[in-house]
Length: 266
Ligand SMILES: C[S@@+](CC[C@H](N)C(=O)[O-])C[C@H]1O[C@@H](n2cnc3c(N)ncnc32)[C@H](O)[C@@H]1O
Image (cartoon, rainbow, N blue to C red):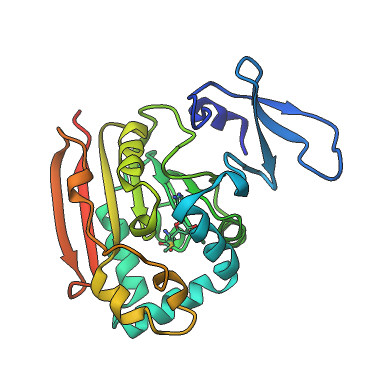
């Protein structure tokens, strides 16, 4: 993690400011931490990634999905390509069209609140500052490898989309692609996206529809995601906070994806 990133970070629950601390290694654990002594807070930095939530603190459906994503992370890119192929959707086209909708401008700070393996990264304009958060250490490890291969600068964080470790009004674009269907608290995750977005910023969310869950829930491997799904997938239009502007909501790819975007008032 770069030192300058400190200025955008806070503790995810108390929103307290954080500072760097380096200590000698004990039992091979982290030597770098983000701390706030006044609040008695410390978050280890492991392999360059600040850890804002430990596995035992992740409960409910988030805990279940963390385990699924950790287990499947090495195969996620392949499974996702196969899943999209079965649905008749080109992954490259889908991601290219999605990234275009983000309307990223030169110098923008862009946040993905579930970056996964970073499959969007090859298509993200190089001249932005990109930050990715995810709750699966396994997915972030794959993402780190991709970042190294691409030779780009990206900051990663392990945390929950419902409790973002970022100061208010930090990002010019905030997005969520895949995942939110099964977040523990979709409303909180959307309110957090709005809080972390600067005034006038675009917020974009997309995920698969119920139609897809029905088609994929019996396919071995891919069904890991859908066999636990205990509530019908409904695009969370009603959870967009009041007062947001330019609200767009539609279904794409033959009704297989839902799409929501809106702007925080300037
Ligand atoms: C379907 S994958 C999508 C990953 C990536 N956005 C993509 O387009 O390939 C969903 C991701 O959401 C992450 N995730 C699930 N629940 C989360 C939560 N509550 N907060 C943050 N990330 C979460 C998972 O670990 C996983 O990496």
